[in-house]
Image 1: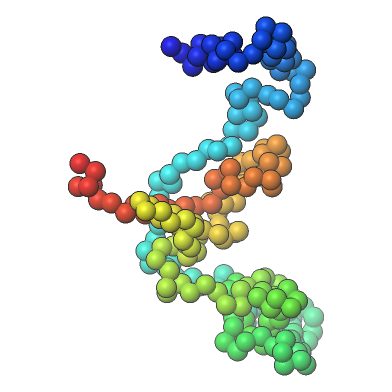
Image 2: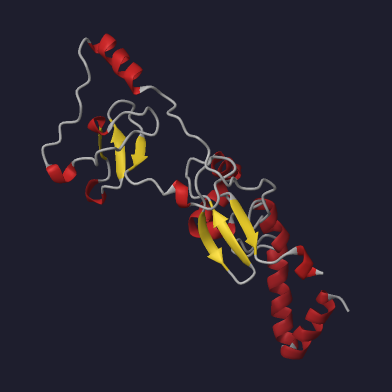
Length: 219
């Protein structure tokens, strides 16, 4: 017996004739688009093609962190600045010792040393801004040498998102990851609004599933 036939029998066993007529009228209103708050399942999927579109990424994660080199040269940027302005760019003048950037910090984009970096998020003091190239960096970047897997697309270390008895799921949380930006750009207007409410219903970030069983155990 089909699912719809069983559903009809269930309705008839639970409701009176008058109530069934009200149900039918309500369904007719939905099909005629007279009830904007209720839509059939296929209509919703058509307008939200990426909703609950979960899939396993075909690309395996990296097990060794990729070598990252600054995209810009801070020395060249300082030289260019001096040529255009007629005077050198001064380091950040931090008078309060509590707001000084930790020694050894560098800009991830141009490689500028800590003398040209300053805190960009107030009391949190977790984000740095470079005075040379105006880019943002983390004060304490995640421990790449302790990470087990790295994102296939951006090389960012994956964090353990979910762990169950049979599988562990690792996820990339880099907001600049090409995979995340590409999937986010696919969302239409309705999906972008829905993603703000139910972000977990859209697979936007790179994920890797590590299963805790072998092929022999499945036989």
